[in-house]
Length: 189
Image (tube, rainbow, N blue to C red; front, top):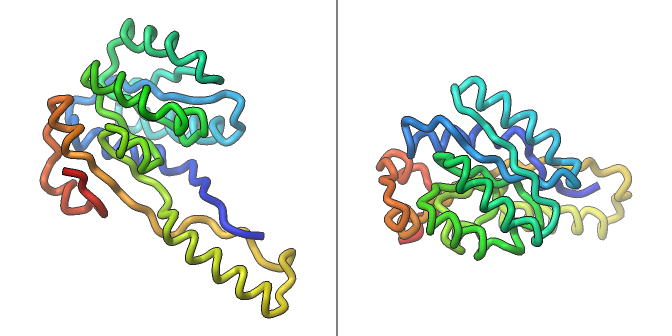
């Protein structure tokens, strides 16, 4: 019972958002943690979306924080147009380091966590954790009123938020289209 924040089908939407910012987007590095079983499903969705959009998607495996430097070196060699970062505690924990690297190398990024955007990333699109917390309170209320937890379904996210960091856009030299800004739930200036 409860709420799930996993939504692997969002990787396609994240690639579409990158394409809106970079119309000639052709090569994206995908940060994945192969130890995270959710990433295998997300990666399949991302590859399907990339193929439909005509984008080369290059997975880059990072299992631990210690593997980030090698990943950064690979990115410098590959020279991608942007980064797609899957939801994982490693990437959340090392967000400052990752976003500093992205800024230094002028790489737009999109991910699932607002914290990466607050650390200097360009965009995040993912489940609204505020909405999920409110919905979790409804579950607690039902259980306190006698509902059996095993009888309550696991709910998927229903509300999603788009956050755009204009300071990051300026730092990496990209222009975010005004139409995208009007769709954003939050704009960091």
